[in-house]
Image 1: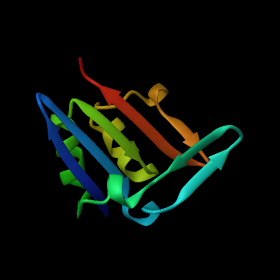
Image 2: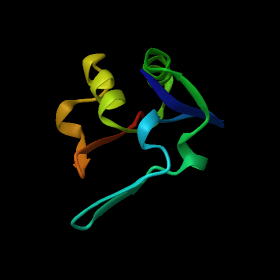
Image 3: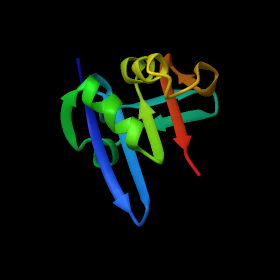
Image 4: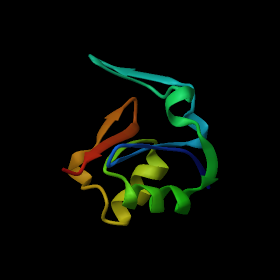
Length: 98
């Protein structure tokens, strides 16, 4: 299983954006909620999902979309299950370490 991963470093922050391979470029809507999985934001390298999880461990600002990567992040203890939302059945989570 693969995910798109983009890591940006700004000052002391490490911003990690990661999404499941199959949802890149798609938009999901449910009620007032909307998420655009924009390729220019999420699509850096296409990597194995394990590499995405390792990057999330190092991120100080994390934005992840997709049932696979969110499930793996939860399993690794990086995201709390109650900290996710689903839009059209697609999981989304954000994390900020201060």
